[in-house]
Amino acid sequence: MVEPGSGDEARAAGTALDPLQLVRQATGSEAGTGLEAIRQLRPLLDEWERQQVERARGAGWNWAEIAKRLGRHRQAVHREYAARRPRG
Image (cartoon, rainbow, N blue to C red):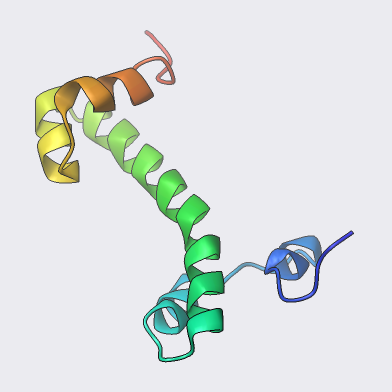
């Protein structure tokens, strides 16, 4: 069952969320709408980060370079993404 106002109704209906609209809502003055938008943005940001890490690794970047751009420790980034990347 899809909860009204959860943002899941758009996904259940097969419609894509508009990230730019979510950013506007997340930075707006309405607290409830902003918090909901942030909740919906979180998995999108995680997926975009994963994609960019894969692109960087494919382009020959090392873990230290990626970590620096993400503002994180090399070991943490390596631990999170190294196991996910297909070898070969």
